[in-house]
Image (cartoon, rainbow, N blue to C red):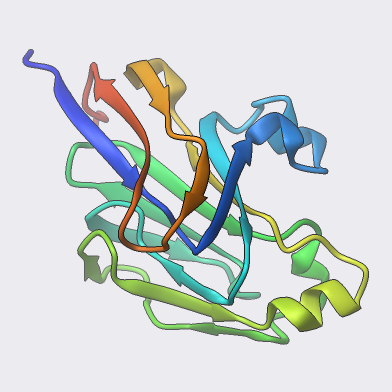
Length: 160
């Protein structure tokens, strides 16, 4: 099978940091997969890849996309933000919809999140790390929906 290279665009505008910097051990220890995190400077969140929306949580703080290359990509906004019950979050997509990389998927009130004592950090994770290799991270400032922050080769497609 031919390997495909996939790039993740920044899910938001801010500064990239390693997943190990996320103040949540599930992300920091890579238990959900390989990825990158972004400290957001504003509250618009974008699809990092083109594909199909698999799920949007009821609290609208997390979206999963099945990418066109066959990887599952999770965009998770904040730490413990599920506790807000959706307050401060507006989803712009629904399960089953197709998206292009860079499309607006969620708006979040990051000031509200922070005022509740929560981190607004955004984690972007490929949840099947065994399907990717040759991962490259692009540290530093990034513009959401535009700048590539991570690239990798996809070694296998998801079995349906």
